[in-house]
Image (cartoon, rainbow, N blue to C red):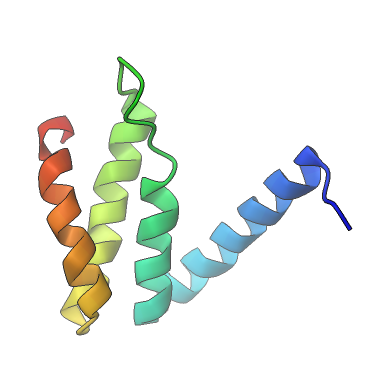
Length: 89
């Protein structure tokens, strides 16, 4: 069964809401996943980085930091990628 574009957007919104709730409750894996979800919203191929993209970068780093603080090795790895994005912060 193929989802319509509207259904895909709705599924993404719900997935992010669920993940955010788990992250806010301290789940390390959810914190890592939320960081990925946020950073994937940023399109670095654009000539202009919007304030919304900057906010996604900042919040994504915040969640990666929280996940890394709980021992996530994957979060430590993506924090290296945030070093590249520092110029936008």
